[in-house]
Amino acid sequence: MTLVIAFIGKGGAVMAGDMREITFQGGGSRIEELERELYSGSITSDDELRERAGEIGVAISVRDDKTKVSEREGLLIGEVTETDGSTVRKKRLYATGGGYAIAEIIDSRLRVTGRGSASNFVVLGNSITKQIANQCIRGAWEGGTIPDAMRVIMLAMQAAAAMTASVSRTFILMHTDIAANLNGALAQDSRG
Image (cartoon, rainbow, N blue to C red):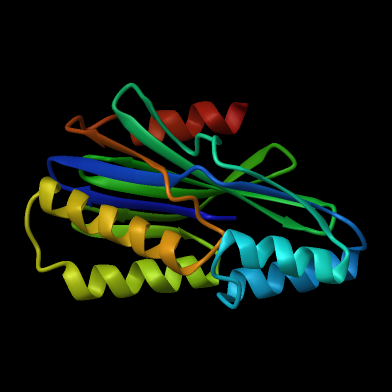
């Protein structure tokens, strides 16, 4: 799991997602140890990640080309993946002008876990990326426009990339001025 951040305004929404995907191979307990260190913030650079993985005997593959943010008919959709042993769980954020929904996908079943309205930032990620993003938002957001929210989100993405190896330095930033049909998209995705 890495980082997706959105701001939902009354007249639009903006969302950013990093592009990192890390896969692990090795003993389950060693992978869990490496993930725990990575997602707690104690591994800050790619070099530290490779070095620590080698020390405990975990093979890693790091890609920085995974698209986690997309747009569908004016609706912004961000998705992060979390693994827990053999269980793969996805968290998906839907954002549009005026509202958002958070859903969890387990075994291809979508379940809405939260909803909200305008004037909110929403952060999906591991514990360290959420902490970094929330600190940036609290420190830099003084209210404002969608472009102001974009600047805060870019600041948070850059700060997270500088402070943890779980986030890529590159990210995708998308914006919509449309109040898309959130309930329709949720119903469509629930059917598969």
